[in-house]
Length: 318
Image 1 (cartoon, rainbow, N blue to C red):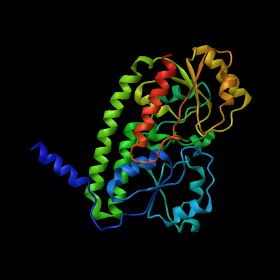
Image 2 (tube, one colour):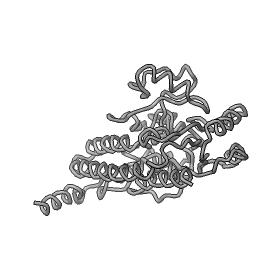
Image 3 (tube, rainbow, N blue to C red):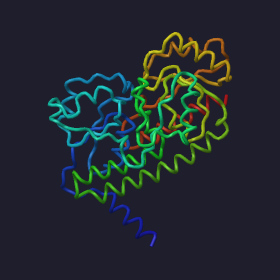
Image 4 (cartoon, rainbow, N blue to C red):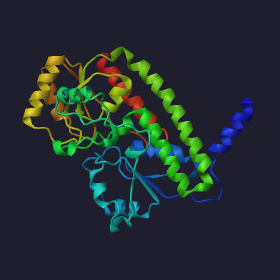
């Protein structure tokens, strides 16, 4: 029976021979990895943005525009993350193509944007309303001058699994012959991520209560999933250049909460982190929400999570 199950799984994971898979593009490395995992043997998605590029500031070349226009499916996070992409979705430049926003996938949990280097006042208001999730996306953050919700949804492993299911659904509509393989691959991805998440939870357990500061507010999904104690960010969720007032606020927060670490990111200049940290006793580390040093492909998402865990454990546990 066990051998039969293994043979059945192998059959489901194998794409239908002789059929061309859809041409697929994914915006950023973590999404590309999820899509590649679901596509499996059926095909290989193209990557729009390398991990060394900030998704918030990317400007697209003619070759990238052509890549989007030639694709059958384009998967993006959406809701303001890839800011420039929203301007061309559905336009003549991409042959009228509308992009699939995976932050809208069923089962994806969204969280409100946190405000300021301290965050407390904003989070407290939501807690009084009975939760921290941006349920229904109906809170009017536009009036506050910020995004409707934090778009870094892929850093919650449960959200990644929900996005994989949506990718499988969309691929199956475009390529029904491989629908069984896509569904099986999405389930296999979920199983791998559950195993990885359990290991990360165990690895981070000893440092869960240690406060830390990040360069830009990209990590609350990871923090909440694993119960970590993020205390503030130098830049906001959109990675805007911090004001002098914000830098002073964050520096005071580092001292007040005795932050163990302040993390920079490879997509941005680290000088501001060094300046804010100097003389506070906090250590410097590196967190990467996009996978700047990773080889794009099916394994990249799991490696991204592992790298975040290792960086947090090594700095907070020192």
